[in-house]
Image (tube, rainbow, N blue to C red; front, side, top):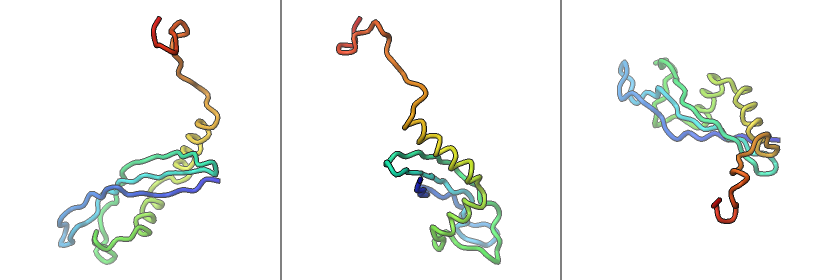
Length: 112
């Protein structure tokens, strides 16, 4: 089972738009999944919010984390994001590639 958490490190806002103040235009987000073994995968991005509805407008200073999560889940392909995180975790648990030094280099000294 993977537990998911959101973080929102930044919000781009218009200072004034059509008489509305501090209008959120873009949310910078991170979405992290952690499995039962403590292994994590993460993805991040920036999501445009679109034009504000004056009748349902919430100024930046009054938005809640739950509201922003709702915006993200309504606009992002959450299934694809969670599949990506699951793949990251699976690759950490069961790698399919590895990076190795040249076999003729002495690993202890890094010399030939």
